[in-house]
Image: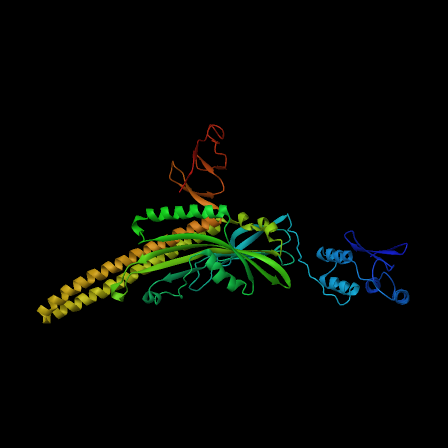
Length: 492
């Protein structure tokens, strides 16, 4: 640290070219401020303890009164604190020194987001491999994983991560998907693993579920719809989902009602004493249908709704800065899942589906076995009670037919639900990663690629893919004109 004396002006070099100037005349600052400045110079070794005592005595003798500090000094101190030159504790001490007894106003701090980024990895602890990569500001901290929550609201493997600025005030958090059910039948509720939740909109989910659990003491400033482009994307996805559902002839739902809804909630709260703004976003997908009656359980037909969130996105910044930095916080656009992880996850999901079908078949076989046992008992009874036995057999066959019809209906509805859930989950996973499935019109091959381009061209040998947003571009005759021809992919 240097000391430069020029005509009674002392300049203390604090580093990075930042200077604090303190004059000894009464016109520039009061005695308390000068005393604090002298103490700082003594403590930092600029002046000796003997020089400090001498100057204090001289100052007390020559300055009986102290005028009020100027606003410029307070503003300068705030700038030094917010730029990191002095700490918050030093700032409060200096304010009290130049303005004894006054409260210290704590302005909103904001650290600019670095333009340089770094690549971080999201690992899957179950597979022990990298599941995806993500780009975040180079000086930010990151923690991410593939979570597999347990319990009745879990829906399998899901991404979750937290990216946070060095001061902890600006961050992005993504939470895993959750699901819940609702039925309008008290009897059917007994067969559900969790209590039913009658929520079918994103706004209701955020206000009643997400915010109370994540930030119970936060103030909800506004509940907002998605931006127009977001609403348009959801509308298109819902139309595609309805088309897929209509094409599943073997798994037709009864009076289906499919919904896809998104919303944002703006919050305000304090984090470590600093006021912050936060935006929480969610997209909710619901599938409601009529479930068939099951006479053997004395269960009449009822309505059932299954909903799940496509994860929950949270962006936080110091109060007043969120809107300005929000475009920089959309890290999800850089998320890239690895091919190895996608392949293993797809295999596990298929295995889980096949296991579910096998379990259903086993239950059906047990049911059939019980029916066979009943038939054998009825036949034995017929030897002793021929007339009564014939009546019982007739009633038994009618009963079996009704039970078989009910069971087959229940099995069909179960397969239908499972297929719809799998299709929705697959579509959700692709959409969240900005991916989509396309079909090669020449070969029928299904190709997964980015959905950020309007046109996708595949070479005749299937090895090269050209992606473009130019509606007039045709690579035929331009790219590898001798060895390759090009076909435009169509959406699956």
